[in-house]
Image 1 (cartoon, rainbow, N blue to C red):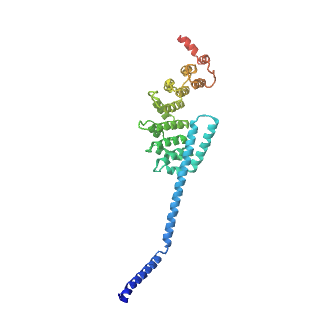
Image 2 (cartoon, helix red, strand yellow; image 1 turned 30 degrees about the vertical axis):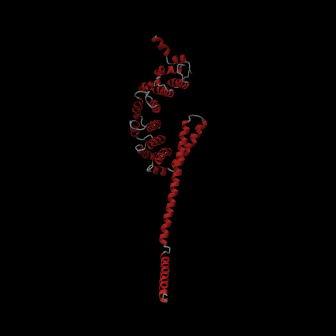
Image 3 (cartoon, rainbow, N blue to C red; image 1 turned 135 degrees about the vertical axis):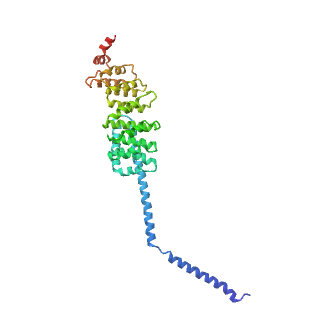
Amino acid sequence: MPSSSAILRPLALLAALLLLGLSACSSRGESAAKDPSIEKQFSETEKMRQEQKAREQQTGFLLKRFDDALNAYHHNLQLGSGQDIATKVESVRQLLEQEALRFQSQLLGFLRDEEARPRWIAAAALGFSGDPKVMEALVVMLKDPVARVRESAALGLGQLAVPYTPLDALEERLFDPREELPVQRSVAWCLVRLQLAKAPAEPFRRIWPELLAGNLFRKDEILSLHGLHGLGLVGEQRFAAEAKRYLAHPRALLRQSALIALARCGTRENASDILPFLSQAESAPNVRLTARKALKHLTGNRVDHGFDLGAWRAEFGLVEQEQKDG
């Protein structure tokens, strides 16, 4: 039988361990007391995290708001004419102008974003701000590595339409053989907008003939439309021959644009090239109507003989010329 001292030794050891455990728990409790500085740091970190989350949510909402408005604007523009469509376009345009001016600093910041989507939304939206000071930032974006950003920058510059926008930066994109077609189309549209805004005329005397030159049947039709529009705005007889070439285009809209350009560039002597498109030989009614308007333009909008070929020939002295030629 073990002695009482042998029995008591394990009990004493257990009691000692319990005392040590209680002591350790007591020590830990004292050291775990809240440190105000740590609490403050944690609180500030959490506040910053929540603020960052709110900013990200606001940024996402802002980008979506502009993206939706831009899509609505361009969608309605493509629907064509009509009072209802015009009202919608004007309503969205006014919204974009107000919001682009209101959030201009944020949009400028988005141009520096690492992701492409904020850059292309901001570039297109800034054009509606009406502030010439954003023009230089948009010109820089014409060299963005992402094509859609370059496209949006051109759209933004065209919408802004600052007459002193550097045309050489746009020319570089238009005639770069490696440039993507949507970018070139946007650049051509932008150039027409700048021309309408009274940008220096001389560069356009070079740009449009160069764009229209070559095989007209192999050219992108939208680029050709912009080119003919711009050529008509130049309005000089020496470019009439380039417009005349496009009268042979199989697309009716291109023939219409060529007739308008020919009337704007030309003098009364161009009537003989326009008259054939007034007759029933032209299958597209809109082309015939455009030919009528082109002839009227050549008279200084003085007379309108409708679709009466004989009256138009007499107006331009073509009956006498035909008799002489005969």
